[in-house]
Length: 593
Image (cartoon, rainbow, N blue to C red; front, top):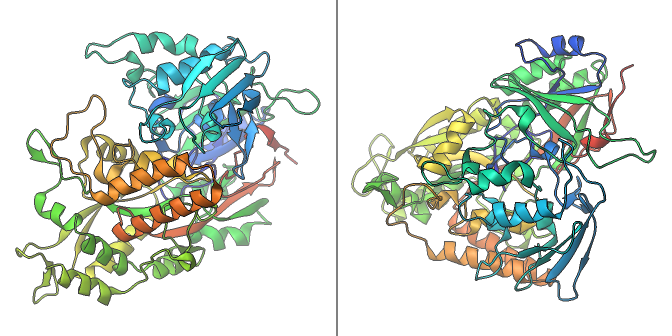
């Protein structure tokens, strides 16, 4: 799972956020409407994005939105409903004990530069990149199996057949084959060559400073241009394997672009003026766009409750770097007190957030597992919830040794005022409104919250690298398979951000402590992946949800409806909450009247 900015959903949440397409090859600064005029003869889609891509290197990406759903494919893929379908592999066979899968690649596969795509690329991707301990990829955690955390064995049988074997049962085994396959001929040298610090040059390969035309892809599109804070331009990959029923190459749409805008308000303005083909519909804009639907020649699609989670999280890391605590010890004692976290949960008025910010288009959220997943545990089935109850919050705080002064300000036992910073991504009116609501709610129980909205990539750096934060508001992407979140729940997982371990190449963390409940969740995620009986798997993941709701490493907020407005000229849309608008981009067509 990946982090994403809230209120940015039109594509698959972990692959693309609020999309709006501009149409252009030129990278000079101008409006989307100008691009449409300049390239009117080329079928193209125009979407927007509020954040620049952080990297063009798939293995090093830990955030959404990113470019990779359009530029890469794996051996298999998941459609917009989460169902498994063939991709680069035309077929596969699984042994009776479920511990061996042989994939057969399609004939004649090629990379975007025309080079052949073979079993050697698959072997390289897994053995040299994903399994390479020198590469700090979050992907590796989701591939580790059992208590031993062993990785699959991947070997080439011939030019088209690859065998994966595992040491013990692993229920998500097949879905793990949806990971992108990377080009060995373009990246092997960067893996084998070291930089001045002794790290593989791969770590600085295919950053956003790379000429986009040098990025080799195997998906429906390849990059042709990137201008920071302006746009990312994609064009059809002439060597993409997929064809329609008449044998014609896909995708139909020759070009699409992310127009990079400063915020979602700008996206809305550009969509209403005709410059964009798709825009995410937030609760704040739903009524306005619904009134304009017929006149504006677009359709609002409703995919039902969205996948993924939105939450606030406190930094529970008790560690130090070079003798300096990562978190102020006074605040760390607050954050690591479960009664403090529960008091915060009771103090947040989710129903008001739904009514005022989401305009009624949402539901309270209580679980790390998406509500559409068969492994989701509902409150009716015993999941603990934190309905708005500020009096209960105060009761918990007083029982935990906190106290109030004459001004109603919350103090700890030593008389320190309870005050902390809430980080979130800048540029989203909805996100900032949620942060303001939380600030207001917590002020009613005497807490002072200082909101700090910063650029998304800067926020990711704080969360992933410097660990310089106290509390943050963001979201994780979601899906069908709980094990996709194993990198969050494994105590040493790359996305275990509420108690982040040091990543390879980073300064070590001294004195980091792992709680018993953290260890137990990590153990249960291993057990859940080992269990092949579906009823037993559900029971295991039900227990993980109960533990997370009791201990609240993440305080979950609201699950909005997945909504998007799409121009009627875009044909073939099959909008879903999981896939969004563009999960089947290779099937979409542009038909101007």
